[in-house]
Structure formats: C-alpha cells, structure tokens
Image 1 (cartoon, chains in turn orange, red):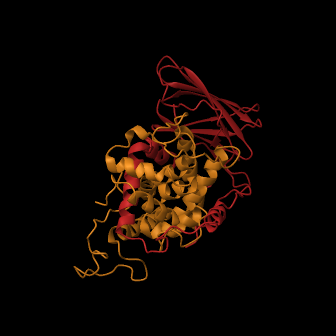
Image 2 (cartoon, rainbow over the protein chains, first blue to last red):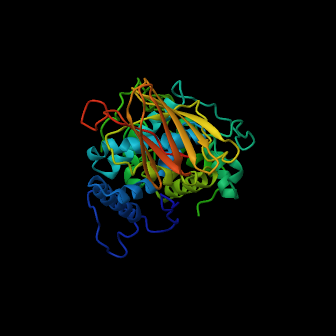
Image 3 (tube, rainbow over the protein chains, first blue to last red):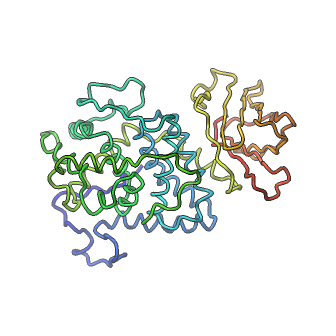
Length: 225
Length: 192
C-alpha cells in the first residue's frame, strides 16, 4: 500500500517541480504544486476512461488503488471489520451499474465515498452510531475489537500523533482518517461526499487539521521530519 | 466537481452531518490557522496518519482480490444483494472447523438463502432457497468456471461439486434472459 499523500520534507521548495527544474505544468488550471498526486490523478483518469470502455483489468487496477480509501471510510463509521469487508465489496459492485455516468476521478471518489458511507449506515442498522471519544484512548482499548489495533501504533511520533488525533471530535477523526487516504486534488469532492462544506479541506487547511496541528505542537515527541 | 449521480437507492433521510459539524464549529472560534493554505507540515501530518492507519487497521488481505473476482461479472445491470448481518459471516476464517453454514442475501425483491456444506471429496454442496419462491435460473460463478441450475417452483436449488474458493451467485430474474423490468440479482463474492 503506498502512502497516498506524499510527505514533503520540511525545508523543501514550497512548490517542488515548479521553480527548480522548469518541468512543464501538466494542468495549469489545477493545483499543480504536488506533481506526484497529479500524476496519479491523470493515471486514474486514464484507467477510468478505459474501464468505462470495458477493460476490466483497468477497473481492477482502480479497485486496487481506491479500496484502502473505502476501507478507512467504512471503518471510520465504527463498523467491525467483517461488516466493512461486505460494505466495501457491495459498494464496488454497485459501481458497475453506474460506471458509465462517472467521468472524472474526483466524481469517482466522491461517488464511492458517498455510497460506502450509505452502505455502512445501512449495515449499522439504526443510522449513525456515535461513539464517545475517550480522552486518553491509548489506555482504553476498545471492548469489541472494532476500532484500530492500537498496539500496532509504534514509535514516539506515531504515538504522539495517535494521542493527538484521538482528542479530536469524532467527526474530525473520521474526516482526517479519510482525507489521509485521498489524493490532494480529490480533497474537495471527498469533503463534499462526507457532508463537509466545500472548501473546508482543499484550499484551506480546515478546522480539523488546524486543531490536530495545534494539539501536536504541544507534544514534545512530535516533530516535523 | 460534483460527487457524481445519486446512488441507485434513494437515501433514507440521511442527516446532513456536515451541516451539524459546521454548526458545532460555528459556536466556537476557529482554531488558529484554519484558513491558512495547506502546507508541507499538513501533508506530513496526513502522511503520518495514513501510515498509522495502514499499520493499525490494514485492508484485510485478499479483500481486493475478492472484489475483483466479484466485478468480473458480465451482467453489469444486476442488482447487488447484501449479506444479511445475522448470517454466519466468518467465511474463510473458521474453515475446517465447521462443515456447513447458512448465509442469507437480501435484495429489494428477492431473498437468497444458501447453506454451504463441505462434502467428503473436499468440494462444496450448496443448497439454496429463493423467497418469494420462483423457478429462476441460478448461476454460480467460481474461479474455475460457471455452474448453472434452475430453482424449482418452491424456489429450491442444489449445486453440487462446487470447488473450494471464491464464488458468486447470480439469479436471473427473467428466465429466458429477455429484457424485462426485473434485473438479475448478484451476491458479493464469498469464500466457499
């Protein structure tokens, strides 16, 4: 599984690939400061086009690329792993009937996230299951095996990040968990699919991310690489 | 960008949680920096989160493979049935310990119940019931080809000598395959 948001080392050019090597800008109308995600977007657009033309192996490639996003969307809804397994598969199968109406990677991820959340809510029965957030979740291991395996969060930085993110409101946790698996050009469409106001994740840092960042700055273990 | 067409089923009054979130935040001052453009520190935080969740809650192995198998389906317009949540889910998990299990799939107009039994020669026998009862064409897609049968008037069907592994049921709701209002029903892939 690749990291979907390429880490940019601190101190790097704020617009890598833009000033230094003079490489042509692929899509002048879009945010082009992160060439790698943009390349990925172009690749997904190509895959989507050929998948819509009937090439199943390209559809399979799309499944491989976007299943992690859908998995984390479903899991962020608080369902157990077996149910999420079914929800994610049902969502992909539902796409078959709708593929010919979906024309861009942004529309694709927006559609998928919308449907996977709807399926997750259906599976959970009585709609939204809000979970109270323990302030110090590292000590409160979940009782039903549903949330993530915290024992696998290792390293001081990982622990610091985990501790900080668990202090956020539940919906911020859901949003950031999902956004972490979204390519940058997709932030807006996914935010919309999550019911967030447009523009709250894309062009601006957004409240959830700002809150997380301010929590992190108070943790000595966290330092930006 | 719009998130594409509305999903097939009408929503059931899904609450606008985004609006709730906006309201919740509206009651307090925005955290400092909310309006700053996203920068490399934010990207590093998001990458850290992705790594953290990848490690702590990974996509189950073979989920992608099961999905890809199910999506090889030829009938693109089929209705997707959902595994009923009281089904005995643990598909591959308890293999060898149990000799049969029953799984139910629901769709808008058809319920499919199957009992999967392992027989001596290590193949699988599948006993199925359709509700409401109907004599419909049943296909079982397996990794080594397609098995077909017809349900009887009581909606019962049996498929024998099913190879172990991934499989997916397709119930043809129009018997002769003619175009009609009724769509075929497919199940997610399950591990026999």
